[in-house]
Image (cartoon, rainbow, N blue to C red; front, side, top):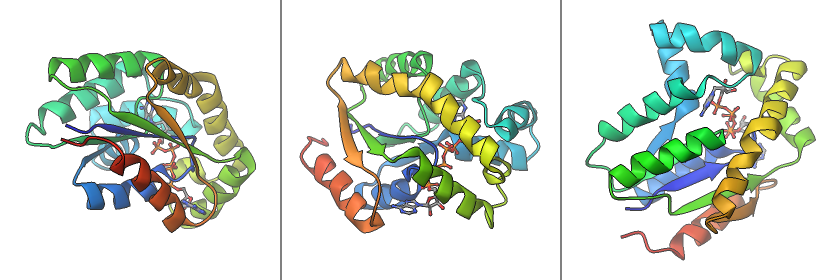
Length: 193
Ligand code: AP5
């Protein structure tokens, strides 16, 4: 089973590249941001609880997202592998994910970490905010808060997986197709059985 974490700061292209990667490699896409936005759209209790955090650009509590991922893993027993997008975002989430995967006799194969400078991220997200309707893209202070959350809590996740030699940095600025080729090259080098 091949399990990939597509890692990077807000706006680094995780969603954009995930769509292409799942089409090419047949992985099951698990995006905690998408699952949370779906819960909000359906006005579920989980969605209503998460919304206030997301609107401010803060992370949703670990226990909420870990439970979501645990259910998603259980609900996809037929998957040949998972692409995690936007998860894990804290060391506690990474430890929980490793345990959940170990219970299923599998593990993270590789962490591909998109590298994009802060000013480029802000530019991309402000541009998307003109049309996306996402409350967390609407103004620059909120986008900077998301980036600060990434620096404070999420960057440590890359350090966590570096201990296991699982992290590969990928330049994330420039042509979307070229970035996709770089990601694909890393995946193609690995055993995906
Ligand atoms: P989430 O939905 O995960 O969003 P994010 O990580 O903040 O970032 P985005 O999805 O906005 O960016 P992306 O890296 O996917 O880039 P994209 O391809 O979209 O999380 C949202 C919120 O949910 C969090 O703030 C938190 O509150 C909560 N949450 C989610 N997961 C959580 C977790 N595990 N724990 C706790 N809380 C959690 O691209 C961005 C834009 O750039 C697009 O317009 C795209 O077209 C453009 N673009 C992409 N590539 C390029 C390129 N190469 N050149 C130019 N433009 C590009």
